[in-house]
Image (cartoon, rainbow, N blue to C red):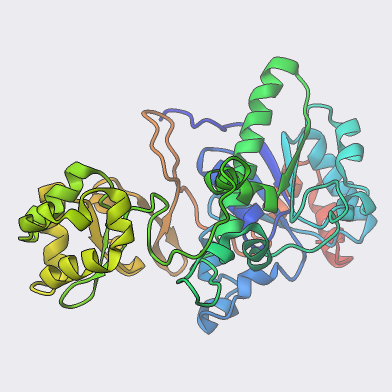
Length: 398
């Protein structure tokens, strides 16, 4: 079997909740040996309240979704013996990842300066709300706060309505992907220099990087973003949400060719000669008229039927799919976009990466670990004998 890109890379993962664990999960899928360091009672994300059954197991579904392929080591980092263990592990590690507030790892004696002296090839990745420098660096960061601060909520929702956050933890996920890319970049750089380095990930800056177009709209054109409802960033009147007979259809019609295909497919070829809809500026100006034309035709059939007909005609669109529906989509099924893994509770399916490699592709080999499941194995591999490990357990170190 072809080796994956990060085979042989050893990661000590102190991250918790979502942004950091999502980052290390991406690397674990691609072959990295990730040892997740948790406090003895486990991180709170193991017990999210969506399902009491899974929370009581310490295996909440959202926690499992970003912790597959990892091993669990439990430690009380307040104890000197635990710090001794980490120093031993860090001396042989390639990467340390953490998402505490700036300064926490330093106070534990496990910060970048201390560990890089011990291991100059070490890459130390920190994910925080605002980065390791600057006046707000010690502020707490949560996905909702970053959504509110970044501009996402100001531009999400319908004109005149309340601001809305995205339906998932978008800033956490963007920050996690940024961190994974940062670590991968540092690992490649190390092949040139032989040196490790600090990777400083700011959730706010990560989000702004993905809002580059909206940032430039202001810095270049002086345009302030506003709420546009379901209209696309292209601001085309036919790139919006429309009502069909039984629900909604999201049209992604952005070119003249697609516009013509749409009107022909819905039986309104006559609207091509309407002077008030002659170009995109007029179509936006007369969006109410255009909506009446389109929705009047769409009322004749259900959204699923229109989805098939319009896409076949060259007018891109989609009905509104739920997650439970899309994971069964023929395209998702054909590419094995979700992978199954055997767990104590049967075979479960999880999302992995959003790309395919011709060789060495991402693979989910093992489920998210039970709390402390690998503590003894990790310590034994680090050179601790059975008596010392037992003493650690007796003293509450592990």
